[in-house]
Image (cartoon, rainbow, N blue to C red; front, side):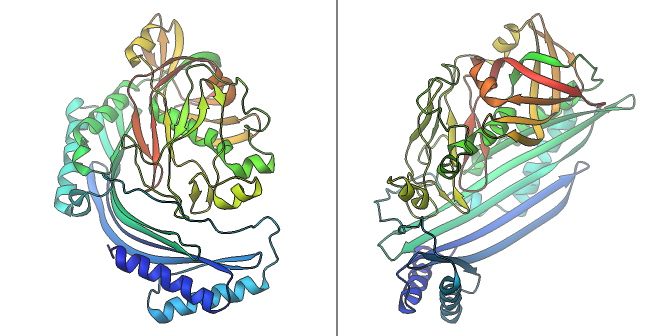
Length: 452
């Protein structure tokens, strides 16, 4: 970690250098990261690496010409060279008629609970012990558990932003996360299970529970059978819900709304989803993975996106906000704007209650290889993975082979039946993530089935 003085000092130096070369406005973003990765496969650790990186990204504004350049050379000479490079590129760019200005400063309140020394200073030996606990717990479930694989990631990072209009923002944070896949084998067939855990504080992680969760799914998914494709009531585990929301959230972007490619176009203020479907974005909520400001130094705040099934808001960075005569909502990302700290309102049901409420349905753990078929109707196609089961008469009967699905997420979330009362925290990069429960929906379309 470089510290606030060095981070903001480098950012201000880059801004000053750009202005001295004739820039109308300038913005600099300093980022420093220390990443550690313990990777395991075949139930043994096979990789333990660390990486340290620091960089500076500079936006130079010449009228309506805007360039963005970056460098890892933070010496005075390197910063001056970066400013010259940005200036030279901006001079030859075409004007952007939609560009108005970099953002004006807004006060950023300090936010606690972001950085934990226990996470940043965790040793390789401690990481190995935690991985060993996860692996041992998975194998202790059954002799049918054969292989445990996955990754244990630790990051400590800092972000400092300054611009020529007076913005100055700095914060540091940590992130610890587990993800694992367990493979079981019996009589020549395999089963698969997954689990994740994440927190800014490593002391919150529970590797034994992660190993047990993934192991139970792996053993429980052995000897999967084929069933008919078609529409079923479906219970989605939080992993699948998070995946679906990742695609739905693309429509919250002001860029896609202004382009006319968002499913939100013509639907804001209308009843689209179930009454139980409420989503908001809040980078200050400690229940998630908070960070106090966006990549332009604008403070994050709670913004309700969908309330009681009614789409309410889109998210802006400064560029898209100026196009609509609005202010940034604090959602500038590394590459354009987007929702980064999503929450889905919790309900009152347990997964057991959802299962008991289902006469003939399917339990889905996770999605993979998902692609958008039609953005405006939010039609997606993909496959289930890591455990899929048939539910009959309120009981999980047996595992089923993975499905191919093609359906509209607008329809899926319009038909929510029950919402889980416990949320799962799932990271999306270092700066944010989602907190989502399990969901039961009345209908979801499966269009094909695999042989595994």
